[in-house]
Length: 257
Length: 260
Picture 1: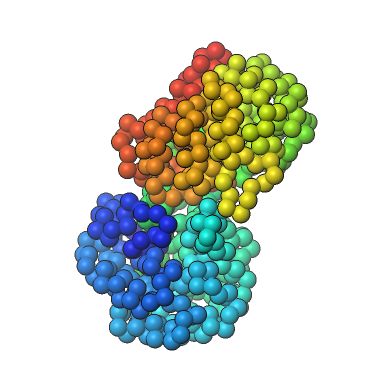
Picture 2: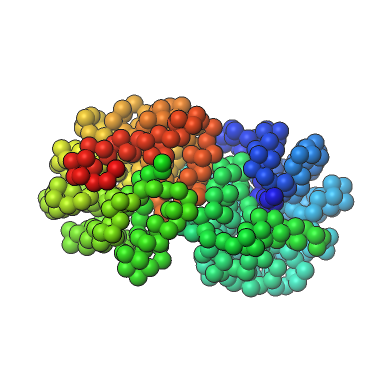
């Protein structure tokens, strides 16, 4: 069985997707032996009523039993009273983590609000998922172009919050090898494989990041789910490595909550 | 049967073309890719002088030398040097083992300077792969868009052409070449964004779609997923994954006596 740490519900703003209805998404996940999916919401990219986004996400995740959908709420620290969104994710919805989109919310990681948000999430024992990009910046809508997240300040922030558990989403296509190595060494930082590219990609990633910090992520339904699945086949991995990436590492990460 | 239209030696481990080719084959075996089309050597050059594209083609010829049962080569040419490109086309395709042409970003293909290359490649039944992109931030000076390729296709309606990357922004790329019946699309070298192949089948028909990966910069996995994951009939998948490329290359492969 597989734990997919990078799935989104609801509607991608620029295109209908074949699996943007949750029932179809869940059926596809189940068909591919994915037993658990950590789900954010596409609505979290652009909606300002984030509390409603997160309430819908939590409700939607509760509706389906065949695959365990684990909600990761959105928090936008540029909105007034964002602290209450963190509180609601934790206390009201029982979420184990939050998902951040700095590039869509218009702040940099050296913004003091980001450090404060990470600190508050960690005090509540929430996992923090940080999305580096959603799509290739060359193919974005001309009226909504956003840069990738600049991770330069991140190792210092990770080091300053010792109990922080950070999962980098959609980072492996564009982050340099040096950045990945530096981040991996800075604290409890995990990486998922949705945007890992290059022939034999996971094998190459294992030269930069310890096995226990690599998670299965698909970026489904914006990406074809088969992309992440086939990466496990393309690289020459032992059964122990496959089990760790497919599920064991993610389960351990959440079990420490 | 999977044939991969779009493979490079760049981005692959190995000191020599032979070492890199062996690496590519071992990964291809893991995902059941039977045949690889290889073009361009290493390091890359965007506007190569004749001696440079000859050097890169030599690297590919060397890489192919032990793998004629698994791999084919396309000659890397540069429309900024049409006369030298024609000589290289003779060397690599007419008199050598290569079966196609790769044109990258040196000069936009709407420019008529490219026409002698296209005519000669067409006479040889060589496949013609033209890189294209629609970059929202703007293309390189010599980088073609799918609209440039549509203009080229209009001047050479009897020559089959391949729209590399489908312009990257495939929703625009498919529309740009939709009415050019002699243009097929190469789907490799972009993110595995859901809906790409479904739209292409709907708008172009499966017979105009060719799977390729763009390894080593990309993975076989992410690019195969565009077809494996598409909600299209199995017969369409078979055409895209190999049938269409095989059909396109069949005349030149037979003429050269290469294994099919």
